[in-house]
Image 1 (cartoon, helix red, strand yellow):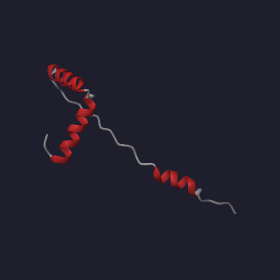
Image 2 (tube, helix red, strand yellow):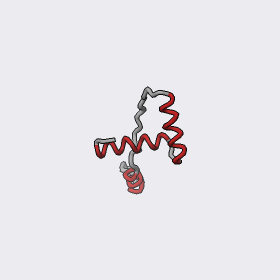
Image 3 (spheres, helix red, strand yellow):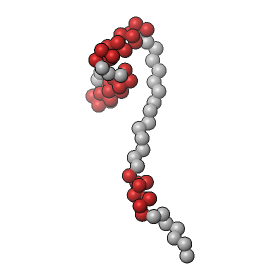
Length: 66
């Protein structure tokens, strides 16, 4: 009779793998000058614009305010 069960080691590896975060593309229509000022400010502070937007959305989800 063959063993139909997976080895225990394989099951532990599969259970430890968490699903990755899902990304959502968001499109905005901005004035070029507004966008340029935002990117310039982010670069002066040493942040990537995408990281700043993610942090602002995270803060909005937690507090409900910008």
